[in-house]
Image 1: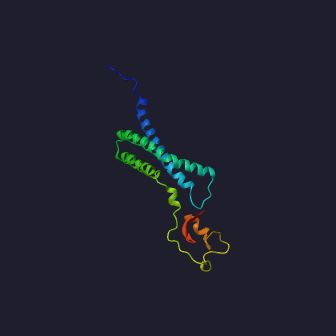
Image 2: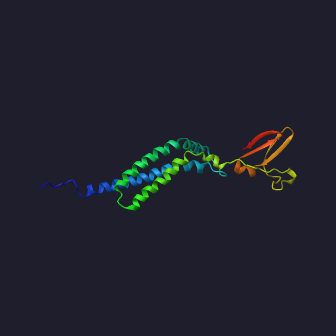
Length: 178
């Protein structure tokens, strides 16, 4: 008769603890992948003050996020495959599949230039002579341009979102920005 003395209660708990650690690791990986793409979008946000450190962090994350999200997605995929084998219930398998959705989204989003989404040029801008521009108060700040004797002014309040205005002034095509 052979008795296995190593298979006590502690040995039975190890696989459960290991799997629980795998789920926690998967959650941390998902949060890290999302942070790599959401932090830059949150820091560089129109109409809010921005710090030098925040901008440096945002651009660093933007630069590293394509590679980082691929590495995180590969690690998560390996974890999902490992956890799948021990998932006996359907809801756990569904949770594993659902965990891949934000990872795939972060991999895709890391390859987009979302900074340009914030500041689209104003297309089809309409212009009015200063005397007819009742929506511009005397105290409003404007960006003024004069080329070849023709002068135009762009209200900063209206440029705050678009940051770019394409125009032709004095026969010269230009882009005004701030």
